[in-house]
Amino acid sequence: MTPNLTYVVVVGVLFAAGVTLLLERSLTRVLMGVILLGNGANLLLLTGGRAGGAPIVGTTPEEEMSDPLPQAMVLTAIVITLGMTAFLLALAYRSWHLVGHDEVQDDVEDRRIMELADRDEGPGTSDFGEGDGDESDDGPTTGTTTASDADRKTAAGETGRPR
Image 1: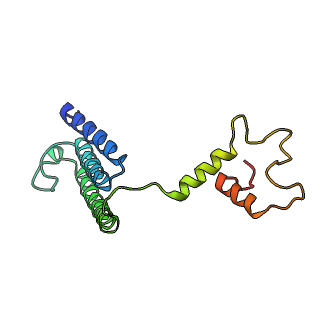
Image 2: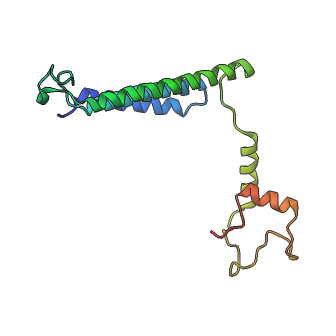
């Protein structure tokens, strides 16, 4: 069976609108994006099945039955979408109750780590620095590492393990 072109276009529009809404900062729009993606997935699963009569043995000849697997997968997808919707509704309500809006803010710690990493990686620097890669310009020459050096390395994503 070839899927109807209308269904394919509708699935594409639902997925595009859902992904666009998922990339927003408002939890209400993210919720709408999850719902649209769920409906797009349901329609996509249904277009993959064979059309026909009820898949009940004895009521329809076997060659005229519809495929029951996509129907079962759509039921599972509906339950998953319902669970995600309930969770996002709870998050949006809690955010509205605590802050007065449902906008997701930037994490201050993530912003600080990015600034530290940008400061450490100046223009023209590489991962291994100058030389053969055995020496490190990051710490003191005595072999000890101060707390500020360790914090800076952790913030920049350096773990001390070889790459």
